[in-house]
Image (cartoon, rainbow, N blue to C red; front, side):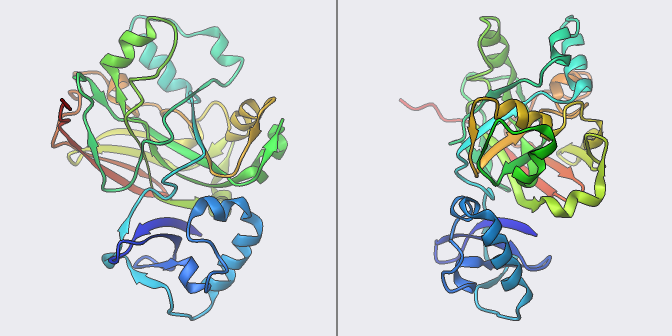
Length: 310
């Protein structure tokens, strides 16, 4: 199933799922209140609610069914409980460091590492991304994210899959000049990532990707385009650390809760920092960025100029 959050013509924001390629379901309305109106509450009782959602999707009820043309898709999980972003693709790490004249870090091969980003700055499909003030090196990052659907602590790799609800596209927008300066201090990234993270257009439940599982990942083509020009092309199966390994690391001595987001980090070739300025300049207002991952859809956002607040 593909889960979404959307705004209706009356301004109400509801969560639900896609009925087909042209229609979405307000699951609260269709179920007469048996299912919640938002995904956080849905995930808090994920197993039972998934059964109910599957049942209602199999009925012929038209109550709560809306054409995608008459609603506006938002970030499928607009207010996640947290957002951890990992650094799990070797090709990206090596190339990005080589471009800065740095060798690979031996410790990277010992543990999957992550940072916390701003879970209150989540953006959805079609939403405008404001270029941060003082940023001249704006970049995209082509990633895949998993959504936690079950509470757990000290989760083993072998058991991690049962804690995953589903997957979606993630764009970890980056102000590279801000990031470069602050990381010289040895703490970060922080302000260089603080302003926006896009997810969407929907969350695909893990069962839909199961047939594509290979090695530590999935056989999913990953692409990024800027103004229609293909810049990035990779595959999720190239991942070095599995989501199971990331979840084991994140949950060590810490409880993970439903509604937390875990990002994969950037796939190889998946950002301008890695590709280099000879391939494409940094992003500017007016640019349109499209991330596409097999089975997960297309996530599009446009860049606009920031306005200084006085």
